[in-house]
Image (cartoon, rainbow, N blue to C red; front, side):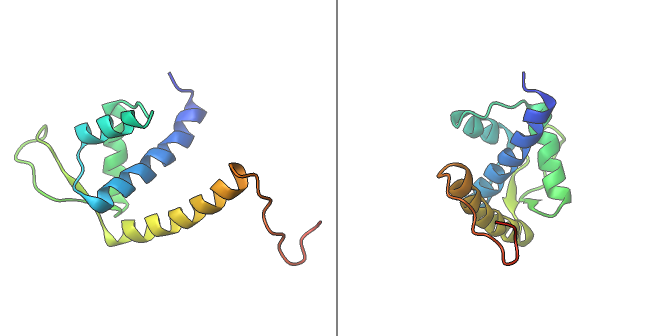
Length: 114
């Protein structure tokens, strides 16, 4: 069981994965749960489905079909706003990777303390 702090951080990582997958294909809950688990991200439907709903409300995902009933598979695809967000996140992730994983110090800002 993840701590609340750990879950909060990982939720952002999971959402980036979802945007990435939804950029290339239609995605749905069961497939996302399986795909994320293959990458070591095991989450419950109770975590995933509210995240998908929030991502849709934020305008990052859109439903690609209208399910005839509540429990029917609902597929999602990235929106233009989601693509813009993903592009920005990829730049920020590259910088974060360089600093955190490769241990490269950030370039100092002009006028910053040494």
